[in-house]
Image (cartoon, rainbow, N blue to C red; front, top):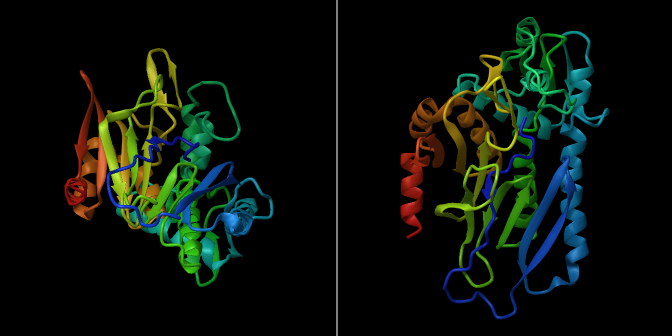
Length: 340
């Protein structure tokens, strides 16, 4: 689960360039979805249709939430989770597409990304069922681990299936990114060439700001005590998605040990490596969203190795004695070089 842990500091910084049009302006829209906030900055020449755009975007988001929410009893995911035996439910093409992408990333990451990890997250006190800051019993973790694993989920034509009654699915680490992409597709359909869409910290940008400069995102220093851009690290976005994951805002300490909200599905325990945050740039917000979680679990060595193998633009901020050290993937270095 990603509990709204956005590690991007969204600074929309103007750059010197010629304006696209003297009448262009940014229409700012926002609302609620998936237990968090959404926002859209759309470059328009006439803001009179603002209510129409807002309602259309909200409808897109409500449609996704109604299918994939674990809080709505009638959602498709809730129907699957309620099954008290191995079985299947009829699912929409949207839900099946998200699950298929999730399973693919699970395989590529060796199980570091897993949409069945929710019960473990909850057991460690980071889920929706709040618990005191206690380390769960080893026996409980062993029991939960038996029903955890992406291998327990499969897609069969139009059916979404699980092979164990106790297996639970939670799409919160990928669905917000998918929602951003769906809003972007809507704006593309209505011929909006310039916009920035965000849901719970996952973003996708198209085109430019009214002055012709790129949408630009500042990467946040992974500090729980203050919010600032890390060493002036600014990422321009050109028709791409971006997402970050970090372990520095949601954690607890017990007997001198720090327990992060980022749970490794393979060990059933919180991560314990030195990676503080990871930012992923990808062709879609959904991929950025999911890979940020996967690489956060994998850590600075294995995660960076996989990012280079897959040619993913990734920036890792790693804890060192002097504070934090940035470690970009080869593709991230190349991406940033193109922006100069």
